[in-house]
Amino acid sequence: MQVAVVTFDGFNELDSFIASALINRCRKYGLEAFITTPTPVITSMNGVEVTGQRPMKFVTEAEVVLIGSGVKTRDVVADDRLISRLPLDPSRQLVGAQCSGALVLARLGLLDGMPACTDMKSRPFVEACDVTVLDAPFHAEGNIATAGGCLASQYLATWVITRMLGEGAARDVIGYVAPVGENQETIERAMRAVHTGEVALR
Image (cartoon, rainbow, N blue to C red; front, side, top):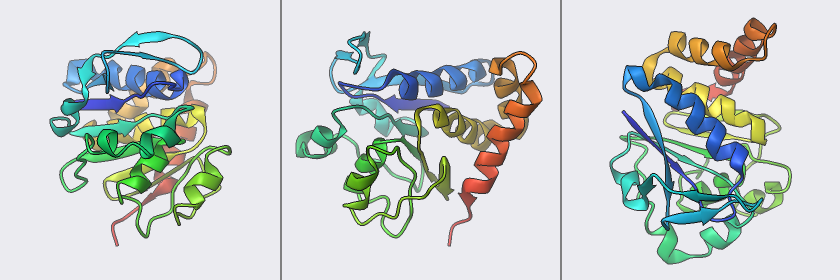
């Protein structure tokens, strides 16, 4: 079971790295995340250069695709050639987006009739796509999910792990990375965010 964490130039490190790191704690169960990039090397919003682990064509193979955010997301959605490299299919893939990544899902037509979560700075741009933005950290309908706020990336990862491996695996991962002395509180917060934000297919 493979997860493509799609990461563009100007990316937010918290969004891509937290999700991928949490998911990769499930490697022993066969669930593995890869930083997936449009070019071999990309640079974060803070100047960190990263070599991608998989090329963009990997999104067609992955069972899960997560779209990270960054300071250049509006450039991404304006680039028809780049967007064409994201042939996502929620009928067979879990698809998630973090913060401004919701703009990518909107551009792909995956948020039609569905509200979304995003960060404060991206909110007006997502709303300009005729998408209702929720005052919530996580929302999912069927196989599509969005998360808002950098640290909500843990909820996106929790959703993926729960859907792919079950709630027990998600609880184990979140409990391990939680601040010492706050393990149970952190686990319950993550599970509550996912359960509260998840809506059955209409």
